[in-house]
Length: 379
Image (tube, rainbow, N blue to C red; front, top):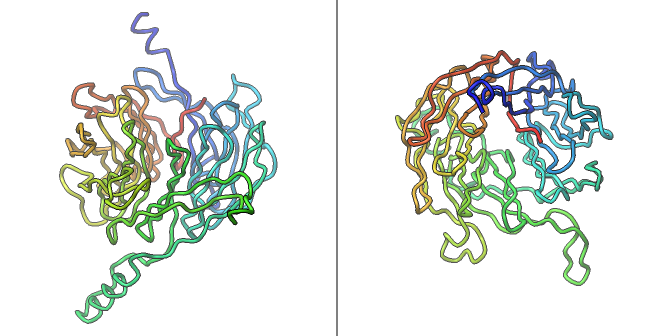
């Protein structure tokens, strides 16, 4: 294959966005292509949905799922023609929760999970054989394990005559991740919690376990950390990026002395090489194809941090790279490319990843995309 032939090979992605109901000018679910040399092109509008801030794809069928953040729903869309990005509604939208912000599909396509930033809801929707949404279950609400600490911190600030600068202690479910053993992990950014769930497909009267989404256990993260998004490492550990403290927390089964089959904290470390600045907030975390590196986007400083993952699974910041735009909300790794979606500057930029150091260089490509919020590889 010639260099020109290699450059012509492209990867398709769906891009979420904020639309008019969120005060922005996004078009809905859009479609992009990215060539092997990092050139990003607009392929068209998939669906003129309202603020589909996150999307997910069915693992086998041409079906796409999108949350509608302002409308508080989740919906399925079908792609009738693989040669065209056009999506058509596949059933009616289903109710979700306030500021629904993330959707993920189980690898066996039996269900999808949805998390809601506004009210902390964690939801599971069973899927039909054709990929359609067929039923809805709601998980138990979270309880703040740091409530007493938060009250004490507020009192200390008040007694010192200082402003109340701590984020409000409100449950804010933000993302979900399908675990290798069939369980589901979700983040609660407001309560500094990881919550692990089981999907129970049938009611078992003899044990009293009802069909739906059943809480397995929880992992308390440090107070004020704000766990946001996660990445699953091949060694079985989960890397969690924290929005407030701008750290990477590594959790794994058995890391806590009494955890049994539960997850515990294995390590906590900074997400950036140069340190965070006031006003920064971490957003996404993604792994390199060989899982030797992790990439964390930081809004405010507008950078992507490269972290090396050692043989023990701990992470070590290597370098901070300017993201090439304003407010890097989401990013995706495609082989030797890193794509970054900038919500405020309305563009998607492409970088080349060094195979030895993992550090991105560029941008080597860029495309204007209105208010992009998520980049998800198409089937």
